Length: 155
Image (cartoon, rainbow, N blue to C red; front, side, top):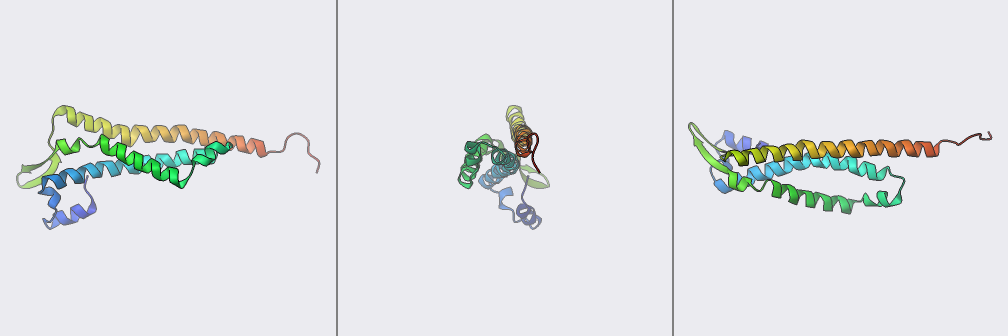
């Protein structure tokens, strides 16, 4: 769970997050948060498509840039709270021949991190995509049925 910059710095033994405890904690916590945000953002796209494809004006009006920004800020805050335990769990561990920033925790916190990560990376985005993707398909089918000519038409 490291960024390309950290990897490049580590090549030259310049990665300070491997040696300074607070930087280690901040880097890993933000890494978990932002990697999880990428997945939920994709799921939010399916919600937006559901809203846009609706025949109801109220739903279509919910799809706005302002609402998207608010949703991203709220989700970032929630995900940061989910992974805030990293500040407690992470430590710099001296395992010869190297020193690494790694999770040094009890079994229960390790289990919490794995379950939380599974829920926010897999379960929530998958369910949102499944539910709202199906709803989008239904909206499109409904709009196609409404646009087809009804009965006999004069040509």
